[in-house]
Length: 257
Image (cartoon, rainbow, N blue to C red; front, side):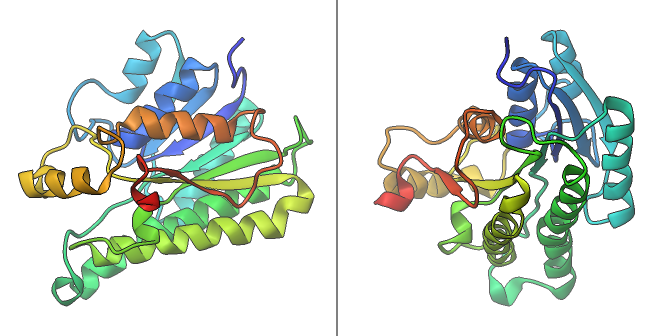
C-alpha cells in the first residue's frame, strides 16, 4: 500500500521544478494528482508531468489554472471534488519572482508577484478550507494543506525583493490558518526550501550564486526537488500527527549555520 492511497491531491505549479517533483512523489504513493498550472511544458525541459506520471503507472490530470484568479481556483477545486469525491491534500506551490532588488522592482512586477505568490496561496487555502470543512475526519484530519514557502521568507532574498516579501506572507498565512482551523481538524503546514537545483538555467545557477549557496550550506551538496517532495509527502501523509502551523526547513542546514 502507498502512503497516499486513494487520496486526492491538487498541486499548483506542478508542471515544473519542485511542484513537478511533489506531484510525481504523491502519485508514486498512490494519490490521484491534479496538476494545476498555466502551462504543460516543464520549464526545465522534458515530457509533461501528467505524461511522466502516467508512464510511471500513476494517476494524474492537468487543469489550466491561473492561481491569481479566484474564479479559476474555485472551479479547480469544484471540478476536482465533482470528479473524485474529495480534496484530501492541497499543495500551494505556484510562485514567481522578479530577480530584482527593491529599487529595480517596478510596480507592475511587484503586483504580479503578489498576485501569484500571496493572493494565489490565499485563494488556494480559502477554497481548500471551504471544501475540507464539509468532509469527514479521516486519520485525524479533514484535509491537509501544504504551502511552499522558502528560507527567503525568513532571511533576505538577494536581488529578489518581492519574492522574499511574498514568501514571508506564506509563512504567516500557514500559521494563521493552522491556528484558526485546527479545532476543525484541518492541518496546515509549510515546506521552506533552501537552494534547490531544479534544472533551470539563469542567474540562480551562475558560478557566483552556486558558490555563495554552497558556502552557506553545511551539507556537502545543494538541494534537489526530490528533497522537498519527500518533506511534502510526510506532511501529506497520516504519519504527520500532532503537527500543524509548522514551517519545515529543507535547506541542508543553511538556517542553522
